[in-house]
Length: 419
Ligand code: ADP
Figure 1 (cartoon, rainbow, N blue to C red):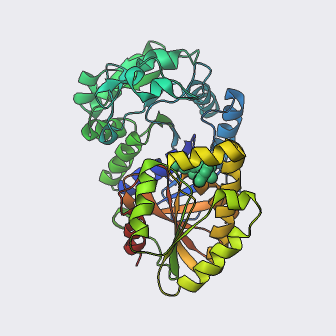
Figure 2: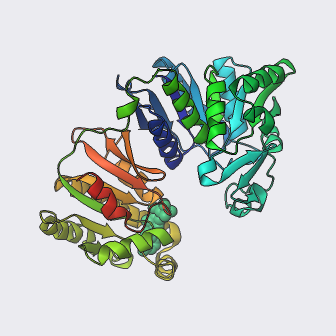
Figure 3: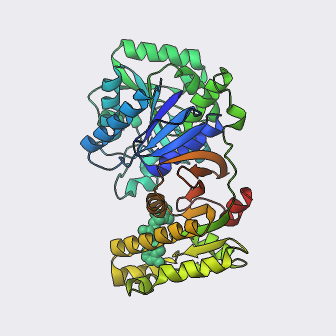
């Protein structure tokens, strides 16, 4: 293992893992801290936690448990991954987790760099931009859990740690890895322990990746991961870079389970339904105790020999509001997630081996129901969504798509990619 990563949420972990694969690292994503050792043939492991918005103390404890596992299995470098919009509050969790990891690793200096230029997240003079506007003017200012009202990352991080926070400015980054390393040394010598690093392009990420190659702890969004992987590849450390995204072939039928009600997913369901078999799971029927799961599986069993199927609860905002008014928001969500994950289990029992799941929470429920502990990351379908191969007695290929990701023909495109 060349790189051991700790991600503060599930889809963020997948995002980083696909960046590492893109850079040439064979990567697996573990759901929580694994019980056993990683496979031999991986360059990077991403441990996915759900620690972004839990109390800081718990986030620290979970992150330290992940660190202990990664070190026990030989990770020479540790990467703490958070969101590219630096989602956090003055209580944490980016600062407290970074502090704890630095203490545990006995290291005096690290970086903090959520930049992801391809997705419009750039940092200039320590200020984070989302597209053309400052973080504090973006939609993130109204986030329900982690409202970001200050775009100065130095100030934001300084509020979360007693260590001193500094800045590596754009002009230094543009001067290349050697200049960046010299600035790191100068900052460390004057007592700065964490440096926000400016980055506005993929070239900057490459320079930062090269400058950080020997840093025991790197904290960043997913972008710097690509820089680190590309640097390792250029150094000849990734013998299997050309085939890093290869997955073993799976044979079996294909299916889609959709519980996301996002605009993108509604359009993807509509597109599929125009020419392909689909079964709608009705929330109110479920709540009334109708045998919806059995009906869905009977229907799918009859279809699957001919063509892949879609089972969906995806509904328009007005329909969702009506269901939520009758059942309550949380109860409706849990009821549907429960039904869709039973349907996913049933589909696998019917021989489905290529399964697309739409919805972040829905994906979490399905992965849990299938008892999946690790995912090997394969080729990208659309930005942020790779095919993965779930471990277990029966290997199942999973594509886990959160809400607004993917083109309108995502479902068919994903299944055709594995045909
Ligand atoms: P996204 O990634 O788009 O946020 P999620 O799966 O995370 O998707 O969240 C969607 C939530 O909406 C889930 O809890 C799901 O069970 C719920 N849901 C799905 N269909 C309906 C519906 N018809 N009415 C109410 N809630 C629904």
